[in-house]
Image (cartoon, rainbow, N blue to C red):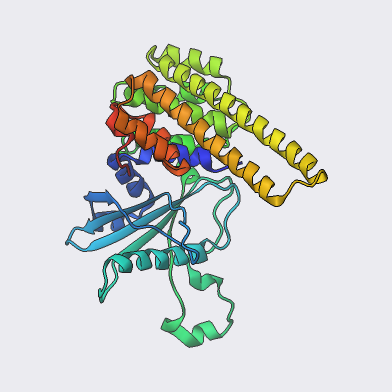
Length: 360
């Protein structure tokens, strides 16, 4: 299953500095949190890139200061796979080096590097049993002892969500929005009905509905569960949340409409893809050139991009009214990743400007 539903949910919540601070308090060891001044936490403009200069996906890269004023870079990978990544220590070491390279490109002549805190937030089914230090992945036998302090050593912080039962999350000092995010990630592969989960989470949902954006947050979770679960009974969920607080019913209705719209767009795109595949098969049999095939493929990609623009415009107009020309121009010129980011921001936006602003 694609990681996109997980990425969409976490982006929806982590764009808020308060939630990002909560996640770091959850993920990082207490001593590390005590050393950081989390009130200075901010989104970083640094990017992780590979040798081909394509961007590496890190769920969020942040900058902060220590309590004594030192600079710190923090990046968190949200690991959604059901199986454990045996080479995560190598991956995190490589990402850290790439992050320093990005920093050096903006700080020519620097003699020392900023501290980096790499962390993995994992919510797979199996307990994490992979190495958390690059030195543990190197085969060398007795050479390791002989090298002593010169043996490669670089580790990362790991937090497995399932280590914390729901009661512990409810009793934590995390704000209710952060609790909802952790609970939802932990239940992404659970067998319990969503309506039963919401019934058990009633105290949290009642607090959430009175917070700014709380109804939209519940809607984002409904969309998430519908994407990662095999079956979600939206009617049953709607009845359950109505019993908790009638205002929450709007969240489910909005989520259902979004899912229907995405389903219609997906159906149209899949139909185009199927027709393209058939056309290519027939065309090759009749001597269709590779240039023609590439042109058809490019046309399909442009069609997907235009469909995304149509859906985003429709959502924005429905919520905020007619779009001013500057925003129309931005949508028309946007790439698929940018349109996706704006769609994610839409759910929690209270003003049109919030959709197009920068988010953590």
